[in-house]
Figure 1: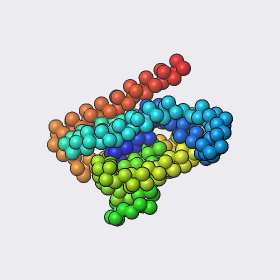
Figure 2: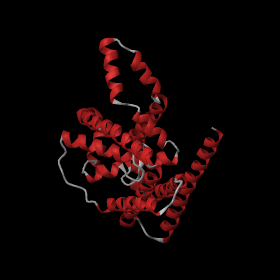
Figure 3: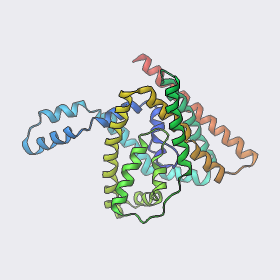
Figure 4: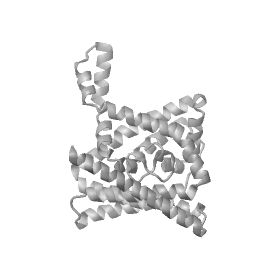
Length: 280
């Protein structure tokens, strides 16, 4: 997820779906409720630890810590590798990720239980929304702290939605290169990073509750919207390949092989997850 989150057009939420952790991620983040904050301050100032410890037990902390460690490691270390690959092997790298995304759309479709026309209409709405992102033009703005906060809120919200790339949202907001420079010079930009992080935390808590509510309200329609977003948002990396790729026959063949590699890798991982779930 962390590696994908630094590539505009590639969604970390899609990777969460491929790896089978999406629902667990949403539920784990949703566990951080306002009541937890109240109980935490009661624990600090009143030494009333009863409710706070009960809240902690309900959290999937082990999962979140491991996931967060992986994401931050990938963002800080993997971002340099990904930037190298994009600069030197752009067409092959993006083709691999397109293969992953295509496979994830099949995984989402398999989870949908009913396929009547009304549900498919929601899929069409998601599809058109995803395609529309390819036509957005990045703004040219000098970032200030409130704008960085907004960027963190919107980017992390996008990362939790399969098909929508948080990095692409930052690109549209004119914050992508700015935040990459912040990460690579963190000590000199610690205040900016903290403000971005606060916005991201609030966005994460908000979107997890919205997605959880939608799944409870109508799981099939929600999955169809996500499916449409995933397929529609493919227009972003595909457009990038058409604009920046090299179209001699050898490059086309190699890119197609990398697309197949991504597709096969994701499908294999999906089958492993399905077998694991059957055993559980």
